[in-house]
Length: 282
Image (cartoon, rainbow, N blue to C red; front, side):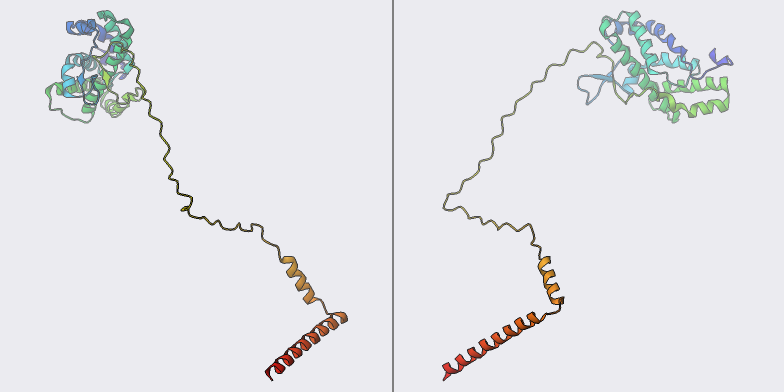
């Protein structure tokens, strides 16, 4: 047995190559392939319409119990606690359908793709149950989870307690190279799908512009527009500067004579005004 070898490898997935002939030995599996159906049976789920999918529920595990038992028995015998890569399961499913007489070569890759992801998803679900040390209430699922414990015991006998503990602690590293995206997998709907019917585009009627109510000419309100503001301010700095200069400059004789004459004229005008007022009063 592989576990007795000194060069034992915990991630050796050579046992996957033994799956196709073991599946072919089951008449029911061969008949499904001859009918153009996938190896795994599927269930109807809300939100998927008429399409049936493979998911991790009790009904799906019960229907695919025999397929999973074959896979898990090989894992237990070879001390493998890691779920194989999805492309390995897809290759095994492709070989099985090719040898079992799958009727449509055009959709052979589609059915192998579906079976590979279905196996990957259900085995990963069972392994999470085992990693969390959960005991399923359903007897069928409990027996499938127990195969992981048997594989763990086989691995422990091959590599020792410390190494097997470290390998189990890294068990969540299975799927880092298999980005499933948590998508459901079709199994029974495996034939080449018909082209989608063209969708009819409905033309929407043009939107009419809203009617504008016109007011009579006599009732229309007069709109008074404000006078445009003078955007360019007048520069008065030169005048102010000239006045300041005139005040600071000393007065000449001519300036004094002019100012004196202006003062005399003002006094004369005021005297004449007062004389007119006194005569009118008498």
